[in-house]
Image (cartoon, rainbow, N blue to C red; front, side, top):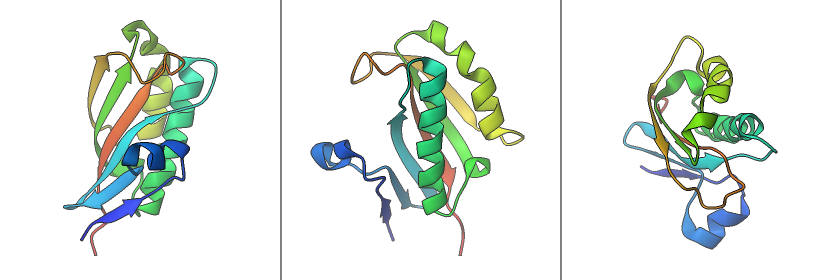
Length: 120
């Protein structure tokens, strides 16, 4: 059984994707950018959106097993570390950071996670 979760974002319908898909025992959350004037604000905003999608799936940050970070400037990753450490706490997932272009230069970070889906 597959469950699709929408955040209601304007690009979901335009591009043809949803915020998260629950399938195969996992919650797959799409790459998520945030709002704000700098990378830390955007990181916090993206995590809020991801947290809401996880909650709709019946999961949370403690259930995340994999996270990918995408940044156009790798030097901007370190300021996000305290925010990320707080979000994942005592349950850090496996992680990868990739330096690459994002869909719009105004975005400084994109975050994608995979979490264990609730059983039952």
